Image (cartoon, rainbow, N blue to C red):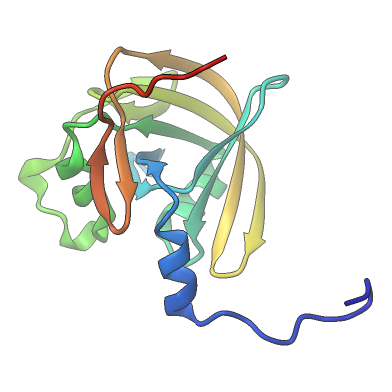
Length: 172
């Protein structure tokens, strides 16, 4: 294949999904305050991009109302869930209309940006860019503040939630 050849075949959606599910990822809730209300969604596509300046990215479905809320406010929070929070992840994975109000987790305001009160760590961000990527948008944020607590992360792998096991021995 030369540099000018174009790939003409693509994997099926189910083949792609099967392969992507083999990658374990942490679980986050991305949030912003829009028109006086907290808008939030479970997101596993989170990435640390840069140390200097501190930057992160999240990928959110293009049709999610959260995209437009963040583009409007230019601020968002990312709450990293700990291993006892699969219920929180499931709550925010639902559409806002399908979420039971009585189980709404508590948010705290961190300089105008909401983050979950009980989480492993959080980042507050100012929106630097929104990049279209297929059926998602990649939001890139300049990190403005962080906080970390001890604990183990909630892991998503193979379509389900997992927890870290014992530490593996490493050799140097």
